[in-house]
Image (cartoon, rainbow, N blue to C red; front, top):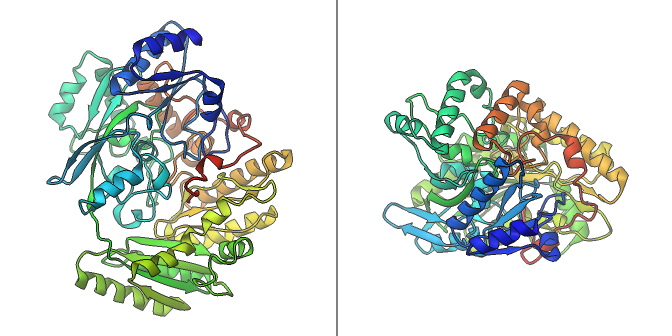
Amino acid sequence: MSKVAQYLQEHLVGEVMTSVDARRYFATDSSIFSLPPALVVYPRSENDVRKTARFTWQLAERGRVIPMTSRGSGTDQTGAALGTGIVIVFPAHMHRILELDTKANTVTVEPGINYGKLQQTLHTHHRFLPPFPASMEYSTVGGAVANNASGEKSVKYGDTRNFVTSLRVVLANGEVIETSRLSKRDLNKKLGLASFEGEIYRQLDTLLEENKPLVSKTLRNVTRNNAGYHLIDVLRGDGSFDLTPLFLGSQGTLGIITEISLDTEAYNPSTTLLLASFDSLEQTQAAVLALRALPDVPSAIELVDGHLLDLVQARNPNLLREVMPQPFPTAVLLVEFDNANERSLKRAVRRANKIFEQYASSLHTETDPERQNNFWKIRQASSTLLANNEGHDRAVPLIDDATIPPDQIKNYMQAVYALLEKNNLPIAVWGHAGDGTFRVQPALNLSLVGDRQTAFRLMDEYYKLVISLGGTVSGERNDGRLRAPYAELQYGPEVTALFRKVKQIFDPYGTLNPGVKVGVSLDDIRALVRPDYSLDHLYDHLPRS
């Protein structure tokens, strides 16, 4: 590999590293896996990425496959930011805002830009990107696009796919393409290209036309779904065609994104926050469904269950002392409205109050930003669980991403409680109740064989449960290596075979992040589990979920 590193360093402007400590650092992300790369590339421009891809393509043509893995800040919890070959690290150099159009309300950025810093810039122009993930302050926009991230505001605004308008992408052979919605006429031009781009359009167009019934089977009755590839919106009924939604959530397995153009929304910092407590899961679910049915949907509907509050109380009793008195309720909802029009805002809050009068046991309303932050500590209390460092047990991201229909919240939570109790694990559930997206991170010691066996048994039972409720195994954080083995359980063999064909079209030699999203077995990932799992590289920021 030293010759490969030497060649790349001679031809790239950016740096190439093969040192043991660099490879050790990039052997882990926020997942439970460890996979050291052969070398690390810090590209300074799209041209560096293009040259790297072209070189690996030429090697693959001669029978030597060296994978490429794109990486942001390493917050991925599915192992998608890990690879055995070349890890391409974007935040070092490719982190600029390329264009901020205040008239069109759009922004174009490089993938390595910190999401939180971009958000701060947008705030100064009274705009924002609503689908920000909980990890916004320490993750990249490129990572959010690769995972099609969403967050607390997505119940109103949707996920990242709703905001990306176009991309620049380096293909497996080093060609650079731009994606956007093409008319039927423009698509015909693409189909006539004598390039790899043209070949991709031809093969994909044929595949989608011939498999429309299978493509329709990828739809789930959930608010968001990142399992497999998003084929449903590539070819529309009017004949228009767009590769953008396909790259969104593809985790670097179809191409390497080097430029992202996004729409933004008007930002209103003056919000109203409602804190409601509930005595039963039935009442909680009824309130969520009623809130979702409002003419003005809340900008956030977040849930924390009483079990999580009990755990936080045991570990950090001062955190909730002045915010949530004991005994804790069965569940708490934090509901936010951000309507810019004051009359509309007050009307929405009144309607929500009527819902809570029917279902909630207590209700607090707050408009003061400082006191709102105090209330949000309840939702952010999950950080206490994630960062707990007592003993050898860690809250591990095994079953941390699933979306179920909101009318299944009660059934879901009861079943999760039973699953954790059966395995003698602490119970705690939290998440985006308005979307039906929930977090569960059981405390395990992965250095113990028994706990690793428990981990894989939990995954099997949990994902079967989610699918039985009509949910998706990858609601918000994508498949990666962790959930890719469950794609066939969710979709069946025909649809997963279709996903593999899509991957083959874009990546015929298997150089683009192999072992992620498709063609992954449980045996493949068992061997990658790291016994010393921790989030030590995130403690500068405090892990969020």
